[in-house]
Image 1 (cartoon, rainbow, N blue to C red):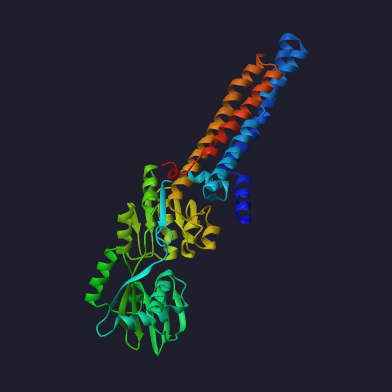
Image 2: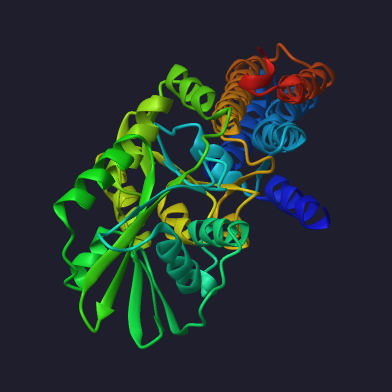
Length: 423
């Protein structure tokens, strides 16, 4: 909780890019106003010979032009916007992320743990000729003993439920984006995707390949178990099912209503990824990508002129979160993902992604409104003060009113609610 508070305070104190522009404008604006006040004094003194009137009108120019409202517009809106977002489970860690999010045109989702519950279960075991399901499961569970991957945990849970005794393994290795390998009983075993089989010259029987394609088409994730020594051959495959989050479809629909295009980036097979995307209504799918491939996919999307937000929860999503214009992490995921992202969804609910974009757009709108009204006060007030139509007292009241109006307009954000809570 203390870390969350510090992050929110840091975001509220940080400067958005538009605030840096305002600072540059103010650096020019103040000398210009002082110059106008000096000219007002000289002009009135030269025309009327009344030094008192000249001083009063020059003071009125400086008072009406006091850039309080200009300086308040951005930080006030950011403070209120980030506070409102935090109350609804959207932690915005810096003002730059809040501002950039308003322009997002494409949201890229990781699949496992982001759109799904992240707790896959073994649904089918298909074996090669002459091998039993129990043998495939027992071998796979032993092989996955050293892995922390959600699929490995699912295999171990199934083996434990079936009361299988696991053979010890050694030389366990994780092969990023492909699978794992280890040695057991004088054999070298591997388990992972088709790329792993191809890299080890393991051929797949046509019958098994057809069954794997059918499983993937139905939305299953398929992991192959094979032996590479002494003779490369497939032992079987394990299919996994992971339940889509109840709010995932609504999250995608909300983004579409905002005019945002959706993409799924996943290391899963193309069949399983396409099945999930069709179910959720996602526009594009990039499947079978390695962790660094996700970052490259984000770079390609940005290269097409899109403003991209990446939503993920795992260590393998961190490069893509960093590569995106806006990184959005699930708090139910890893610390690495949360530290990399500029926005964290504290409930791990994908429906909050549309909420993060919505609060960003509303905050940015309040910033622009504040800057417009602050500028409008000066555009109207400075000529009136220079011409003698405003006394310093009236100018002071008008200046205070401009600040009050900008702050009041920003405070309207306090009533903001995510789209999901407005239904």
